[in-house]
Length: 262
Image 1 (tube, rainbow, N blue to C red):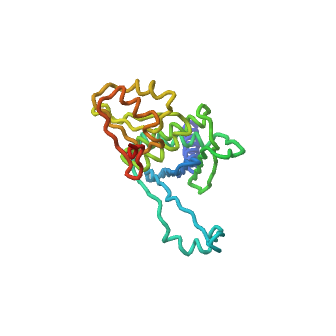
Image 2: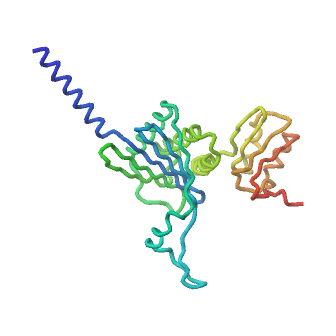
Image 3: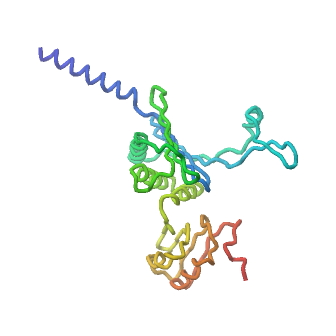
């Protein structure tokens, strides 16, 4: 009798495990789409334990009717030229299993939360799609979630983990930073203290002196403005010169940041 009970229990456990695996999440797609910056996409594959990140190439398609009139190109034309269009930039990694598990766990938790019903005029939209082994898909959109809400905290944590996993991919790093702008007012990121290398994202003149005061002392500071959106002369340089005798600038070649002024 005991043997029969043990067999029944074992069969129950096996069936339960099979049912659980049947509806296990196999793929997760996370898209962060800010209003005024480029979006980025992350795809987790539970079979291969790989993560694919991508940044879309931003372009629009117009059909010229006259020199003053245009309309969006129709879908037939789009399909005929799709293979020639600029391609998205992709990055693929197979991170440590613990990191993969951590990110997957956060996104699964996010997928179970309710979403707000009405999109704002601008802000940031977070798209989340999950797919299980039965190919059943679930899609959600979070419209400009509050940073202190449960979904906001999970999204912020998602950015942090992705940034660590793809820490050597500068283009993706910039895209993540541009999404993070919608959740915090981070002025800079300290990338190194020896040498002192600081990447500035914004200036917030009313608070910049206090924030720069928190930076470690050094004779020389390397100031990275490659993802900075303002003129350095607004208040950044003036405040930096109060603390550092030598400033070394890292700039995008397409921007002058006020250096062209006499």
